[in-house]
Each structure stands twice: as structure tokens, then as C-alpha cells.
Length: 257
Image (cartoon, helix red, strand yellow):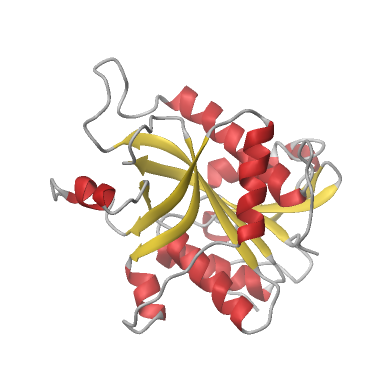
């Protein structure tokens, strides 16, 4: 029995969206069919809010992960115990890629493991973990159908939000990394580990650029997205993720069984 998600097998749908923020989980549940009143809260232990409902008649859940890979790892391990098979992180990131601006959408094609949890799982050995191609393609296609441009590429999963190294962002940018975030590497590892054991588990990651960490923005641009604009941008990302995960977007196609 999971210790942190006080739920039973069947309480979660196979498709689970994973925001870090419990308030965002509640906001996502309000987008389910019938709104928040029709969603069932399946967990509130430790403030890790989880809800299950439907989106366009397809069962779907949302589960708070908290911030950072230690918290996400606990949540994802327990979701896998409870039968989740499609996991989509929906979060925010600090953008560092060229041509990016606040409010943009990033879909991760991989995550550099600059975090402690993934390295702990690997016992210090090297590892490269990517999201599921089909689920990632569905995110891109759902965004394209809405006319939303996507920055597609690798991100770096880090432990330190306020990094004091003045060259940190430029160093990772020179490596082709688009953004910093704090959870994706462990998500991709855990999904890959489950798939390696024969389970049909897949993961993907969509991120809204909440702030820019490089110096190539114009003087008129904000380096951090105001809260109201951030909510609009994340709502758009969540709707794209819901359409991708459930296969209900315009022109959607499902080929993952």
C-alpha cells in the first residue's frame, strides 16, 4: 500500500497529469468534464492533491508531485503501484534557449540528470533517459493543431533553484539545453525502468517558460512572467497535455494501443 498517496488501485486513471503545485492540480481538475464539482479527489494526504475525472469522456487524473525529484520520485513510484501507465509532467521552467521568451511552450526530448535522485537511482553510473516518442509527438501535434509554437529539445533537471554560478545558464545553453526544471529526469528514468521490466508505461513532459535566465531579451520584455499571464499560458499547456494524453485533440490519432 502506498504511504503518501492514500488511494487504492483504480482510484487513478491510466493517464495522469503531473503538476508540481497542488493549486495547479485543483485548477487542472476544474478543466475536467463537469468542472471541479464532478472530479473526485482521490488524495489529499500531505497536500499532494490528486483528482480523477474525465476529459471529453476519457478517464484522466491529475496528481501533485511537489517540487524537485525527491518528491516526484515518491509520487511516481506510488502511482505506478496504483496502475498509472501514461504520465505527463506539466510544469514551468527557466528558459535559456535562443529565441525563447516567457510564456513559450517547451516539450522535452530528454533531460540531463543534474539532480541527486536520478544519480542515486543509477548508483553514480551514466544514464540517458528520454520521454516516450509517441506521447511526445502527441503533445507537439496537439500544440500544432492550436497554432501554438513549440520549442522541442533537451532540458536540464536541477536541484538548486537560485544557483549562484554566474556562468551556469550560459554553460548549459552552449550544450544545447533549452531550459532548467526540477523533475523530468527522475520521471523519465522511472518510466524507462518500468518499461524495461515489461510494463507498458510511458512518460512525457511539457513546460511553460515562466522566466528567462539569459541576457538576450530586449529591454521591454519581462524576465519573469506576471502571475495572470503565467496562469493563461499554463492553462493552454494543460489543455494541450489533456488533448495529447487522451487523444481527443483536433485530428488526434492514437497508435499506442
